[in-house]
Image 1 (cartoon, rainbow, N blue to C red):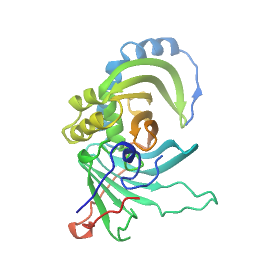
Image 2 (cartoon, rainbow, N blue to C red; image 1 turned 90 degrees about the horizontal axis):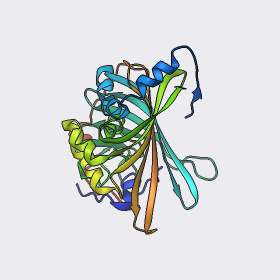
Image 3 (cartoon, rainbow, N blue to C red; image 1 turned 180 degrees about the horizontal axis):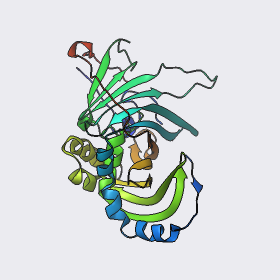
Image 4 (cartoon, rainbow, N blue to C red; image 1 turned 90 degrees about the vertical axis):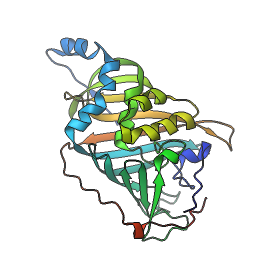
Amino acid sequence: MTQRWRQASGAAVLAAGLLLGAGATGCSGRGVAAEDARAADDPVRTLRQAPDALLQAGTSQTRTSMEMAAGGTRVTIRGEGAYDFRAQRGQLTVILPQDPAGTSEHPPIVELLAPGALFMKNRGAGVPADKWVRVATATLSDGNLVTGGATDPFAAAEVLRGTRTATYVGRTEVAGVAVRHYRGTADLAVAADAASAAGEGALRAAAKGFATPDVPFDVYLDDADRVRKLRQSFAFVNARRKGTVEVFSTTLLYAFGTPVTVTLPRAGDIYTGRVAEG
């Protein structure tokens, strides 16, 4: 299969031209000061261990969004689905932005996430509607942190293994769940060194492919240290505009323990022709 996946600006699209792309309230109560002191004790270590709490949780449902400014307009791509952290498999339905008239120009894209691979259906770009496209994530210059229009939830969490600096912001809520808010910066190269065997290659590709390996983030952990919300900023070089562009990825995790079954496509269902660039 012949595929040309853009580097630089192409890291921010669905590999061949798909445009890329939560609020919280305060809380108070007895024991908050003591809880704050414990949370602030060693935030770097806490965040580096956060992916392990997801492995213990096993599965969850997820919502994602990816935002970028394009031509003076902020564009957002949204996704929703479920993820198995132990198998590192998930399924997302990704909704592309509407056109100015308020209608969708592209049907939802179904994405299957698996160790080392991204499968997409309704990809467009000359791919038959009943076929899947398979992409090896380690070959993407962003490691599929932004290419698919939705960041792989466990890959997003494993970026936290590279946390270099972090501060505890305070207690708040996400979707009615009490959480601890941390803010910091992770290093993709450090994250790759500490990542799972399945995730190392993609993170190492991202560390080399982005404009900088530094990833600023805000993360919200529940009382079991599970990621409930993670917002990250990825920077890539836009060759056309000759500048650096930021892509903001937000991952929400909820309904832990939800049964998740991901069936990967059969070889005969995978498109082997050329994917058009657009």
